[in-house]
Image 1 (cartoon, rainbow over the protein chains, first blue to last red):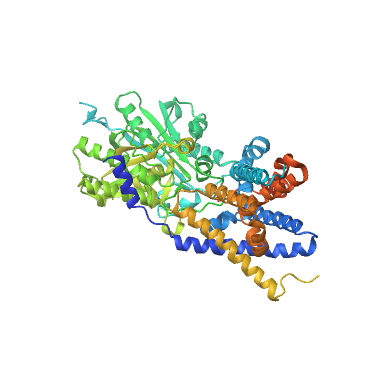
Image 2: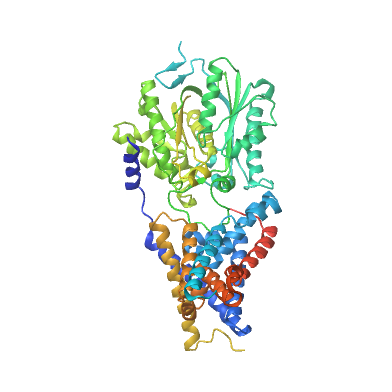
Amino acid sequence: MKPQEYQKLVQENSPPRPLLRNMLWAFFVGGLICTLGQLVLNFAMQAESTKAEAAAVTLAVMILVGTILTAFGVYDELAEFGGAGAAVPITGFANTVTSAAMEFRREGLLLGMGAKMFIIAGPVIVFGILSGFLVALTKALILGLF
Amino acid sequence: MSNRVGEHTVTFSRGPRIISSHTVVGPLEGEGPYALDFDEILPDDELGQKTPEKTERLMLEIVLEKTLQKRNTKIDDVQFIIAGDLLNQITTSTLASSTFAAPFLGVYGACSTFAEAMGLAATLLQGDFAEQVLIGTASHYQTAERQYRYPIELNVQHISSNQHTVTGAGAALLGFSDQGPQVTHATFGAIVDMGLKDAQDMGSAMAPAAFSTIKQHLKDTGRSLEDYDMVLTGDLGKQGRKMLRILLTKEGVPGLERLQDGGSQIYSESQKAGAGGSGAACIAVMTLGYGLNMLKYHKAQRILIVATGALLSPLTVLQGESIPCIAHAIALEA
Amino acid sequence: MPLPWRLEGGSCLQYIIAFLVGGAICAVGQLIIDTTKCSNAHLLVGMVCVGAVLSGLGLYEPFQEFAGAGALVPVLGFGSSITKGMLSEIQRLGWEGLFTGAFEITGLGLAASIVFSSILALLRKPHK
């Protein structure tokens, strides 16, 4: 059998993913995490003087939540049914950093944990900065902000 | 008398046997349907070791040691150790074997390693190059995840074709004796690459290799699947075994009801292991546990082990390469 | 200090909106993962870039006003914070702001994740 034939056969016989179920769970889990974030944000608004500071505090707290849930082995269980609902919120970002830190600590603090902490989150930071740079540069040139 | 039959099958007329063996599995496997077929079920995944790599090495040391102990054999009476595993530079096998003073031959066939080792051991015995050969392999869920996939606590949503690496180790001593199942044939496989690139579905990538080796074995020996009480593939998993059946059916090969798959069967449905077990230890523990017990308790007279391996690396996947696969078949007789 | 969960018109609605918007963003993400060859990494990078672009277009701020945490918490918010920081620093410093602004807002999240993760990695081992 030729490779193309076999590849087609594999595709025809691949079980479909439960799309609707996955999307509903992602919606529910992601929504819940954001609702928690809203609770934190409201508390923070009371305590901080500016919106920016309140937002900053909220993010810090959500990151801590993500880190703790990861450290206690809960976040990956959440992701099994939550999927993108666990990956997309900032808690998911925290999970990538914490899970890598925990994992690679075994190779030592410096060359293990230190070196590989951002091994999963790296692309988000790199491409976030790159796209921000392009957008900000473009806008600044268009508006003559320099 | 020739040592070969057909194009790619080696025969062992001198009658080398599996004269001793030992299997060790983790707690998850110990809660599965074949728990009673394994020699030891470990209490946890760590065994008091600091890293899972050290645990994997310890498991292999345990099975190698106990295999020898069961026959009161000293390592001085063993001419070769043939071992391999999934980790870079097969360090589990090298570090474990460093405590045994016998010439070491490291092998790598991904999850087909155990059959490769057994076939080579039988070949050395047949050729009178050795009197006793010790073989072994091990794998561990956490070490495989770190090397091939992701940190353990990372948020990952597994899909139905993902497999779960078996935590365990299996070793066997091959030699000449009047007891123990005989290794009668070994059909070593060529690498088969159907251009599949999805590392999330290795079963489908490996099925053509299993198909190719099974076909070759049957052609070389003139046998049919029905001449075996059981044909046990290593770890095709639910997806892979489905594809193998499709391929065999298209070819008109009879006897598909003899097909079983270690990976699909080692865990029960409720254990939620996706498409099933995988890892170098899978075929080792299922063969030495389940397979050998079938022969020992007269539930089978003759079985064929078809171990399958996906010869990819994390780097090749990133570089856009397809997944080359391999399968080796070993015929055992009670 | 009034409690933030008082069930008056504004607040309860806030939570519902955060839930719906945040959930919707995640559901779209799930759709992308399940129907395309994108992995989690691809999805998150895509979202952070979208966030950065929306912020440049001036669309993310009003969105955040409306959806609150529903816009802040998803990783889109991370991307928008990068652009926002850069633009605000450009106003202040000129071209250097393109670079100093990168971590102006996101710096908190990065430092927090490093500190918290390090502490917890020292206290807990991965388990399966």
